Image 1 (cartoon, rainbow, N blue to C red):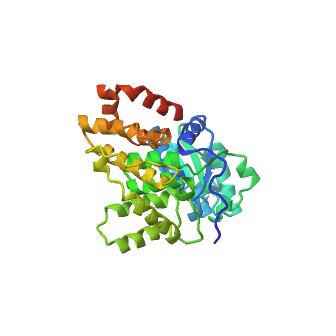
Image 2 (cartoon, rainbow, N blue to C red):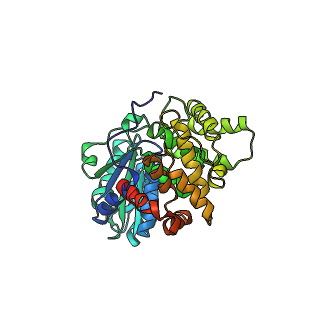
Image 3 (cartoon, one colour):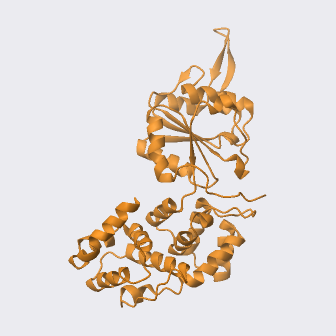
Length: 354
């Protein structure tokens, strides 16, 4: 195994891709979405199928043989001809609007399989069986440079798609992780290290990706000793990244959130000296606010105190606000008369970064 040079490839972020792919599918074009393993291609397909209100038919091309894609011909004695016996999923796509998702389409697929895909991709049919007019077809594959069993497709097959590439995007992932209620310590670590920590192939069998970090977040709720916790995290993102993560946690756990919000004890904030601590503080505060159903007057005043503290720069204020933007806490902050002095500035900061 070898590591890739950089995860920052040309392409679009998750939220930018969604409307582009939806518009393409509505135009009855077939989409091929490529990206790093674990970056969220399948999740995006599932999200779009839900928004279309269509049942997804998920076909892993690398795990199928040509007959499971294009069907087989059997003798028809009455007509003295050959008749195509199509797979069950074809009947589904013909009778009802379906979201046909061809995953792993470039994962070592032989040429005979590629030939079976031509009709599906270009004409939305298998032999004489034409798909329902509202059935859409989307495919996904890994990047060849990621050594994920991806092989180049024929030029004829390539030319039948609209091509999009999904890039690793820490900001988009953090928004998703916040809404999903993922571990605040993992979010703080990714917020601090950005794309380089979110996706990093170190040559180990386990390595950091959006998918593996989401899996590691499940460990947060497990009641296990610390050494087992580290081993479990390592099984998801690898030993090298786990070591960096737990080193960061030593800083993260120094943050006394209750002292800040309940007692107004704001620590010295110096991003130039300890950037990791500022990220840890930002995500710790955000996590607690997300879980607060109501904010007292004193908590609101302490938040004002935090926002006017030297060192808590605009970038951290924006990050905190985005972390709680869809919560009761943020709604309360916007409506509170005691917060009027900085309400406009908060709004403008958020608008400027959207």
